[in-house]
Image 1 (cartoon, each protein chain N blue to C red):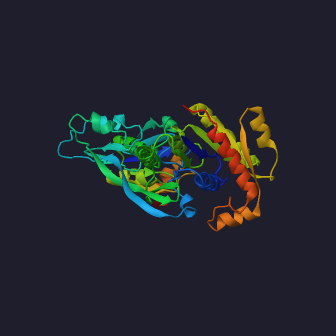
Image 2: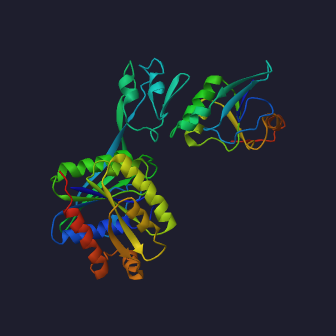
Image 3: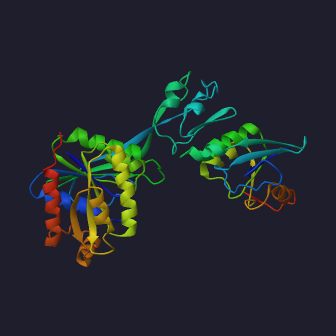
Length: 112
Length: 285
């Protein structure tokens, strides 16, 4: 299974990014291969509009089944993610990626 | 001639000035007053009359035709606003993000994104003595003020002769709606108050008008409160101060009752006279 994180870096110890649409990186962990793929999303800073749909689209291309994030996506992004069938868990905005993953495994994150 | 009444800061008195200036001018001449603050128009609270026309206004948005689409993704690549997204085997359109630029529709190789009408608001044209009052109101849930402002200006230009004085009550701030409301006017009056907030936002508004190349001047409202920094700033930057409207409880009371104030307050009327004289002496081709 592939699990996506919104993060400020690309490693287990990186801080999570609480924002969805304007997250700095999208990090996808493949638990079967035990490896990360990441996407540098920092250019989103220059976008005045539509950050949510754009990041959602990028996330979709990376093929995760689950998204772990902080505040949760806004309306437009939520529409895309719902169509894409990605399960969303929120409330991990102040954790590291590792902590967020563990919290998810222990069912300590809220569904969106 | 088209004059926009704008401001950086909200609540400085754009509507007070727009409605009173229009009514004052209409004591003698024909005038058009337009409320272009379509997200929250309020000039209509002060101007009542006979409804001349009500138009429903639409914007154009793309509609996906699944049967002919080849999912090539050109639409998504070309949309600057991420209003069109390809998600696997479907195309999603976000009407609130769409700026009606037609890029996706025109560049689609199979014409699978024809543009269709979507209701965005309503334009009202009211006649009140010598005032033609035009007000547009954006529907609840609509996010784009710009297309409605543009269509409202278009309505005014198609209905009234070029030489008729037109006063535009602009939205506050310095973002897209303000640009749309001011970009084709001959002159911009920036209303401010003599406070640090007023000065801060006035500077932003002046920068915007300089960037747009719009001749502009300042009206200071609630003069007498705050400090002298706004006056100093205008003097240093050679920005004419057309009027100083004294801070007055009476004015606020009349305004709060939805009344025009210039008839009751001679000192306010004097300031309007100064503004009118300045406007009528502007050399505009």
